Image (tube, rainbow over all chains, first blue to last red):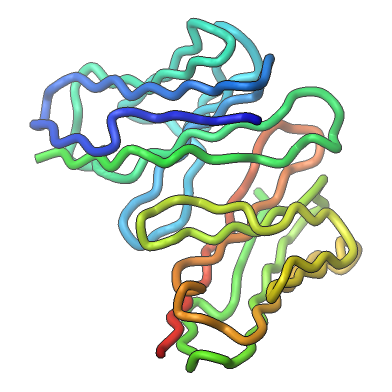
Length: 115
Length: 109
């Protein structure tokens, strides 16, 4: 069966420090991968998605970037964190190909606090 | 862009009560999912339901794509049903999913 991992689970970082959040998927190949952010008490905002190695689509101009160095690895980064980057970051995957496999599955999330 | 709105935004129920949550979307979509976000933040898949009706235990969902809405029914609610319920739609011709505004449910013992 498929499993999605995220780490770290929680992170407290000072303003201006760099960020690297990692997401890996097991048990599937060629997944579509997604990064979402959820502000406190709010809904989910799509940040980036990727349909293949090295391919990244950005949905919201911001202080963050994403990379996909391997088929089942998705990384969210920042060179200098802002207070507004605080939130709950969720990684998700869906199977690529037929539209009948569009169901999306989420990882456990990383709770980021920027002080 | 497409709008996905959920109602009611907040709901408080006594244990054992039934409820209906609604998701309205403003454009054609490929499919729709319902999620439950538990108090620890984990998003749990409830239904993948582009159209028709599905049931899973005390939960059931109906999507009427031609009228652009979906309903989630919770029967005999339990305290463990508390949390936030989201619908998410997959936009036709894209790889993108758009989440609704959420319904925060609290079930009292």
